[in-house]
Length: 172
Ligand SMILES: NC(=O)c1ccc[n+]([C@@H]2O[C@H](COP(=O)([O-])OP(=O)(O)OC[C@H]3O[C@@H](n4cnc5c(N)ncnc54)[C@H](OP(=O)(O)O)[C@@H]3O)[C@@H](O)[C@H]2O)c1
Image (cartoon, rainbow, N blue to C red; front, side, top):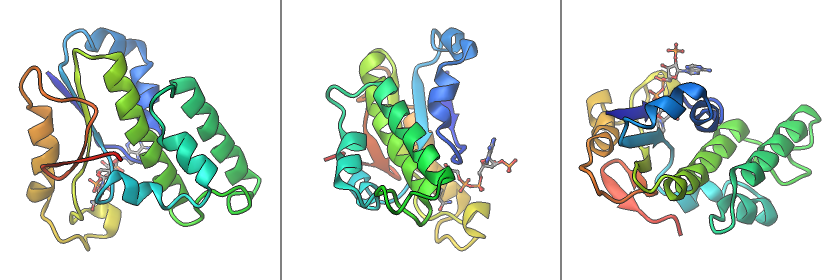
């Protein structure tokens, strides 16, 4: 069994994975695929102006869910208080960018915590869907190729990777 996460508007993976439901499901699933965005991991990260936040969000060694959570709460607080720009967060598509960066990092944390599962994130490419008012260049079928391929990876496949469509890309 596999799990495909398509929702993008908040940092849902963590909430989902913490649910009791998933604690049960995780015993029977093998692949988890998170929808990410942009061409490469670093491409996305560079949209965060603050070098300190970029480093803190991007690190994996020593990174914990709690640490990542704390950063996301500070993002939310800064958003509410109108301090995004002052505190070095992106001001354009800020929630989208920050949630995707967090999800990429979370993919790597999770894959370390669950070495028997295959947990990856994928950017589907610029696909004609509601999210971009159907201005994308790929059809939905083309956009689905990467996520479906990852969802059907055989047992023992590499985990904790970032894919652009069907191609693996590095996080570094
Ligand atoms: N299309 C692209 O070019 C592109 C590029 C890069 C990454 N992505 C990623 O691919 C994923 C799928 O996007 P898409 O292109 O298929 O976009 P989409 O057509 O706008 O679909 C988004 C889906 O998420 C659901 N959703 C949104 N907010 C939700 C919420 N708060 N709770 C529950 N469901 C919610 C929507 O449900 P409703 O229909 O009920 O609103 C919809 O089914 C997203 O994570 C997106 O970031 C897409």
